[in-house]
Length: 76
Picture 1 (cartoon, rainbow, N blue to C red):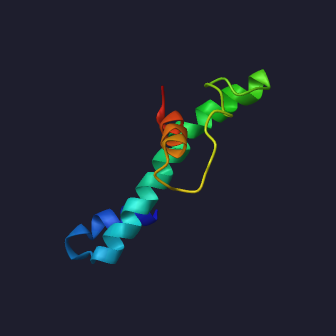
Picture 2: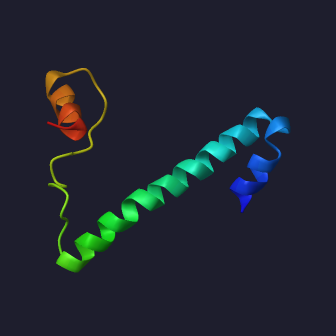
Picture 3: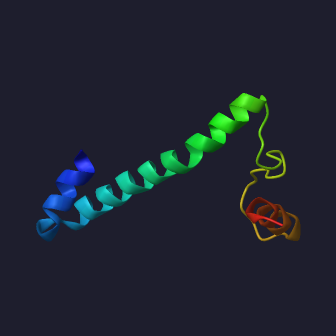
């Protein structure tokens, strides 16, 4: 509903309103993409889309170990 309101008055949006529109669209797309993944995994009683324990958060620094950890979060 709010997305439709922003789209209808697109010509007079301020930068803050464009930012809010972007957040709303991104949130909507996240829900559309993640809902089927969560539903499938719930039916199988385990996560079906790769290992979730590979990506470990760490304090940002430039040491090789931290860079390798960051790259493991991005993919293989």
